[in-house]
Image (cartoon, rainbow over the protein chains, first blue to last red):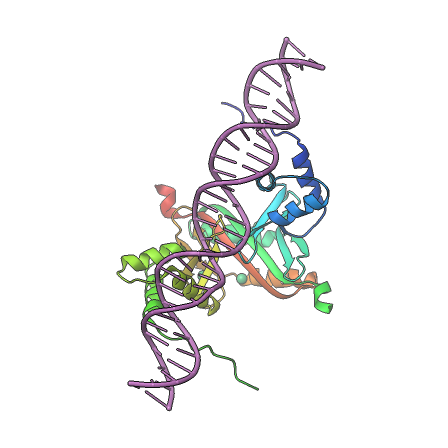
Length: 134
Length: 134
DNA sequence: CCAATATTGAGAACCATTGTCAAACGCGGC
DNA sequence: GCCGCGTTTGACAATGGTTCTCAATATTGG
Ligand SMILES: [Zn+2]
Ligand SMILES: [Zn+2]
Ligand SMILES: [Zn+2]
Ligand SMILES: [Zn+2]
């Protein structure tokens, strides 16, 4: 059997720029915002390349992508273990959270109804302490 | 103090057609699919009106809207109590599920981090029994 | 039936995302 | 260092879902 096909990803200036931009914030940002960030850092990367790179990183599990209320994709550099997010609706401040109990629950519910190959999405939104006081 | 402003919603042929279409399926459909369904039922309703009506129903809590993998909005007539969904990735078959434990967990996690005004999204995807055998 | 207000729809406008494809680049071999 | 080749890039066009516009129409209460 053939080993997993590996497309041979190359370390380019552009990919480095995207990675660098991702390291500069810890909330979720749109591809366009990240593109602007890169420009402001002095680098020049095509918007299409930003999209391509973000998608690749998401596939590789290095960034998480979710959708804001308008359906726009927003991205964030994340740890590589399975987790969910607690996101501030006002400033975007994000906390990674884990919930073994929830993981078990989704599996149980699915099994109960005979569903297989389960995956799930779970995000929590609220107002963070900092935004509460202001 | 003035009572809650009530925009005075009128029962029109169009809104009836959308409601009727919604009653005709129990999986999640896109606005365009619902628009097609209405046409096939013999009614004629503008696409913009379908969007407007679906949004209004969603605000009123009579339908649930979520986003598919591509970010498209998909809609479904739902019960009015808080619940989540177990959706077949292949045929779309949907089961409404409730999980008091999960509700408590999200609240606890949020409180633990000082977040307030909590809301959350949670959807489970998998392959339903029918699609498993085929 | 009237006036006031809400609704509709055809099409334009928006805008995030993806596709195109020739030029530029990274890499391994020589 | 130089070649050859597959990979990557980017300017720009194309897509496609969703919203906007605004004049024409429908509903309602009187
Ligand atoms: Zn994450
Ligand atoms: Zn999980
Ligand atoms: Zn529902
Ligand atoms: Zn819930």
